[in-house]
Image (cartoon, rainbow, N blue to C red):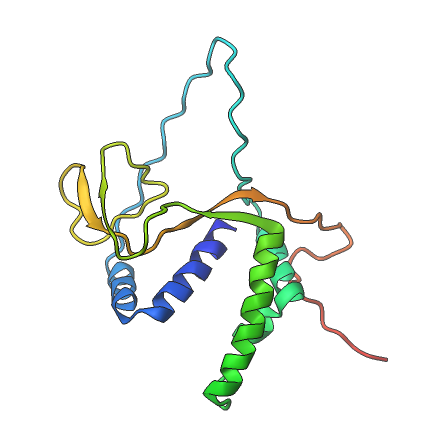
Length: 184
């Protein structure tokens, strides 16, 4: 599910900026190696105050498909993205986008509590000290050296503080995003 949210945000970010589209193409052409897995931490020996529960990680393909199914049901997002829009006028596309955008936005608010990772405005200069979280902030450009890093915020990022997806029953095929409909 994290990949879907990232892809969705990347799509709209790249769609709005030629410069970011070029940056995306550079990243795809020259991917950086994956970071090594984090070292496991020892269990605390003394009881500690309970930390807030982190957002649930999606671990199955079924959960990702379930999320797509919700976006399809609430906003017909899949229908819109799969449609060939070449024969339509910009005005027709704009009207469709407004409806899909509003409905998909409402679905995200209904099922996810999304909050920005950074609060600064996009385009603002920021400084990242040694304690910045590389799981929440991706560095692009010339990233050699040690923090602190000075740069420009290209995208604030998003994280899910809470996910409240409805349960999917066993009666539903986990691979089906939207069943075909036949009127009799």
